[in-house]
Image (tube, rainbow, N blue to C red):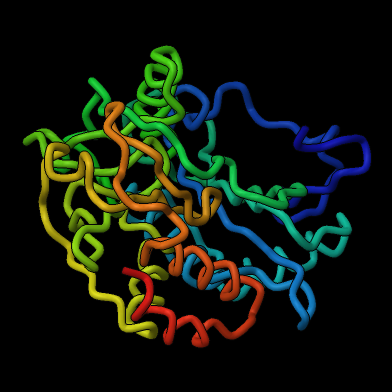
Length: 301
């Protein structure tokens, strides 16, 4: 699904065949989840293959490594250049890109003194989630920010995501909505969340969430289109039965929500401001103008 005998990845300074790449079974990342990573997408545009927000993603990868005390010396510019080379070598345009910083063997609970960079890429033409998702409030909470670096994208953190997502699927839902330790809405298992009410978008503030790059892009879109938005704390009760809602993330892109805890969002999605944000994002990643959507705001409600 992700690679075959022709696939190439970047590992520790070299481009190697994916089927021949090896890692150390005594590595600290394997044993303790002590690694940081990114999820990035590239798109086929009228200007050629373009990696969306490449510098922002690699800047965050470096910041995650710093927060986790993992030594890492690549610059963002170096990684962007390597990634374009990797896409060309694999013949990819619409692709998902996974950089991963892994640590050397170390069985002690101490910081690593050596790391390796892996960059993988595979074909991916759409988000990993489907539109109009039925979501459920999870029994699992997001990690307490007092106990973890929640603003870093850390491999071990995603065990929490797997548990929450699988619980939702086992209950017959598409995805989970996780709360923080105080019962406020945080995010999904792998994406940020917005809801729409009375012509305004709401999203949880930084603190207990990974403040996503797509989330920041939604803010940019709203600023350009004149859509009002607000970061605030809210309980799931406030989100249930709102006008509309969506998840957003690099892999997911902008994903419409159908219901929360079996309570449907009220508006027809196509008539919502959230749908305009979704359309604008599709144009933006393809390097197309989306400001023509702004006049539609008067008839969106």
